[in-house]
Length: 264
Ligand SMILES: NC(=O)c1ccc[n+]([C@@H]2O[C@H](COP(=O)([O-])OP(=O)(O)OC[C@H]3O[C@@H](n4cnc5c(N)ncnc54)[C@H](OP(=O)(O)O)[C@@H]3O)[C@@H](O)[C@H]2O)c1
Image (cartoon, rainbow, N blue to C red; front, side, top):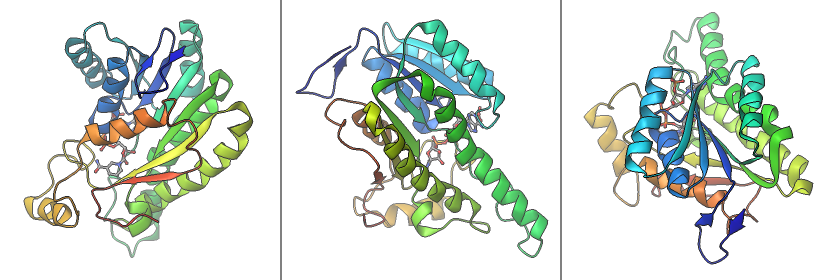
């Protein structure tokens, strides 16, 4: 791999990047950003049709893009082996692993008097947001390139709490601790591990369609910059963390929210 020290662009003859949650929103924009850099990108999500469409969309907008869709449920431990064999078949080590897969539990907002419903929400939150990252990271660790980068996706909800009984925000906060452990475990291999914690990002499927106008207006008003985040904003930060200039950043939670929550 040839890296250019003066810019974020990496002239990559051989960089393999794995993006989970790549069929929509932040993950799709992230996969596209690496494809634009001539990286080989493995796109992962559960729904095959939507994932294939995302890969085709990237191919048609980025001439020469080298993208491969692979439909997997990353909360399922068995997906680690399938992922490993696909990566081995490329003959390349993983230079960047970006775990964008995540979801707000469908059961969020269930009757909080009912402990069973609360547990359902928390299990769903951990499965979708923690296990998806743990399966991808632990499955690919033996196949990571020394000097590679791991990026997990937290949320402003890790700082502020979330809807329902809070399972989503708590699951995102759990990723912070995991990032610190990974950075310590992998530092001797030169592998960085960080989490990105976005505020409200529009044009994603996270909220199951467009937010009610009043809620969106309220979220935008909370920002200092007066606008919602764009998936491209978040994609650029993930790209930076996997670049040579971002190589000394590790064990950090990087907030990107237009100023709607003050950084600590
Ligand atoms: N949008 C925001 O405002 C916002 C704010 C803070 C944090 N975030 C975080 O940023 C990340 C990306 O969010 P987004 O807004 O881009 O969400 P999105 O548009 O809903 O995309 C989520 C992606 O994850 C995939 N996915 C979900 N569960 C999966 C699983 N078990 N295995 C594999 N893929 C799975 C989805 O595809 P399938 O359903 O086909 O699997 C989809 O590709 C998430 O972790 C989210 O929590 C987003």
